[in-house]
Image (tube, rainbow, N blue to C red; front, side):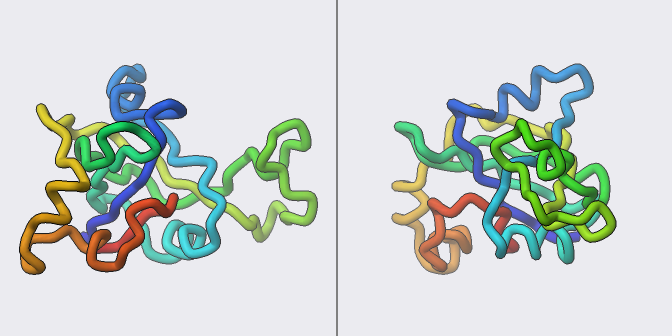
Length: 142
């Protein structure tokens, strides 16, 4: 089992949205950074654990946990010309973008804010701070 950090902008999709779905599961879609593509396609596996990180908001930080509930599959939005993530040359048999589904596990009572994470000792810090990539929009392997 591996651990991943999935970043989301709470204005678009937050952990509460994941919690409020009928089965508390959603697809982790709209990621369009190639490094994230490779992680999603090659490394994220069924049963992996996910840390949900809210960005582009007042209190940047870790807000909860989720589980990966399936292996990767093609992001259908890349094949739909009316969607903003449409990719003209993405073949169906070898899609450019893949996604995974995650299921809500826990919402923290308090956000573990980035400011607090940065004040931790190196042994305690979450890897995303050490690598200085807190604002990138992709799952990060810990």
